[in-house]
Amino acid sequence: MMKNRPGIINSRKYDGSLHRSWECELISFDDEEIICRGVFEKTVEHRDLGLIHAGTISYERFWLSRWYNVFRFEEPDGTLRNHYFNISMPPTFDGSTVEFVDLDIDIVVWPDGRVFTLDLDEFEQNRQLLCYSSEIVGMVDKTLDEILAEPARYLS
Image (cartoon, rainbow, N blue to C red):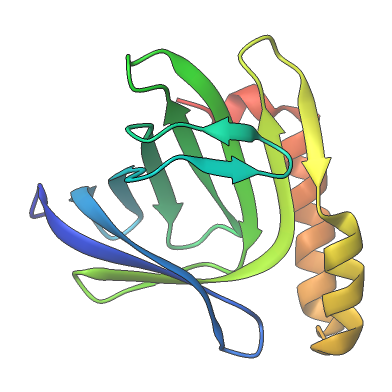
């Protein structure tokens, strides 16, 4: 397990096309889990999360066998902003690059305990457009139910 070195995160769509890519610091990884740290270089206006300020820190956890990843966003002063789940296929990792297939649905958990599921409409559109298999749809449904039943269980 090597620590604290540069890395890349690639978020892909089901058809393999690159959706987003960003640099990170690989904090730790082993045969089960990868933990990265990213910093927003510029302020971003997110349709569901509002204004994310430059300097916001994102601790990003990926499990090699789980159908989601979770980001812990901290304000530049270190206070918790929110947690953000991406429903996704299990990632691949080559020692420096994490790649995952984003399956559209996201869950945001605010510090006061409010939980919102986002992008169900995008999932339905892409399910048909990109021809998600019944196995993929089943895993998405199962993962969504599991997280929503007890979201705090998955937060750190």
